[in-house]
Image: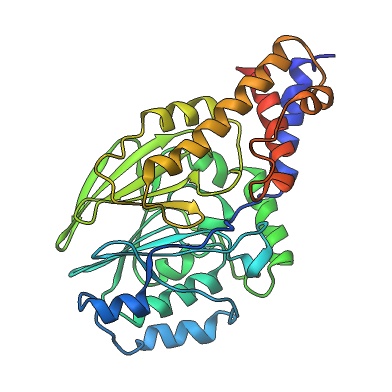
Length: 349
C-alpha cells in the first residue's frame, strides 16, 4: 500500500537523521603523489613548519592515518580519504583540494575532524609557507566541514553556497555533532564547533588569488541542500564535492531530480582532471560523471514505477534488478537506503 503524504514526510525526515553516510572509495589514484611530483617539478618548494602549525599540533589530538598530497595540476593537489562509513579511518573518508598560488593557498573542503584538518595543514606546510587565504566549501555535511575551525584560525575566508543554513540551523546538525563527539573522540570533541561561512554565494563567482583564476559554480540542491563546485582555470582541474562519487555507489539525499539534471548538463570538455568528493581523481571526467548519472537515473526510474503503481517499498526493492551495481563498492551499505530515500522523495515531488 502506498504511504500517506504525512507519513512520507515523517519517514523522509527520519531517514535523513538516522542514516549512516557511507562514503569513500575503493580505487587507487593514478595521479602522482607530491613526493614524486617534487622530483619532477620545482613548482612547489619545501619549507619548515611554521610556529602556528606547531601550536596547532599540540592543540589538536594526533590522528594516525595515512594522508598524502597528490598532484593533479601544476598548482593543484588533493588528499583522498579511504573507503568506509563516516566514522571509519578516524573520520578520514572524504577528499579535500589544495591550490597553491603565489599569494596564498585556496582549499576546497576541510575534512571531517579538526585533527584531520590540522594534519592537512602540516602536509601543506611541507611544500609551501603561503598563508591559507580561502576555503571553498562544497556543501555542509559533517565529513567536509568539521575541519573548518583549523583554517578559520589561520585567518582564511570561508565561502559556501546559499542554502547551507538549512543544515546549520537544523536539529540534524546539532545531533550529528553530538554523535561525532562520541564516535570520533578525541578528534572531534567538546571544542569542535560548526564554523559559519564568511561569504555565501547564490550564483557563479569568479575570483583571482595571485597568479591563479578560479570559478565557483553554485549548483543548489543536489547531493545536499546546497552544493557548489570549484574550477581552477589555469590547471583545468574541477573539484566537484559530493555531486560526484568515483568508482562506487554514491550517497543519495532527497534532491535527485535537480542532481540528475546538473550531471546531464555538466560540461567537462575543458577539464583535464576531476576530483570528486570521495574516491580518486579521474583522468576521464566524462566517464566519472556517467556512473553517478546512470545510477541516479536508474534509481529514479525504478522507484517512480513503484510510487506510481502504489507498490510497498520492500516489495518494490526486491523486484528491481540491481545486478549492474551490485558489485560496486558500498552497494551493500548504501543502495537500499538510497532507494528508500528516493522512494519517499518521489512521493513528494
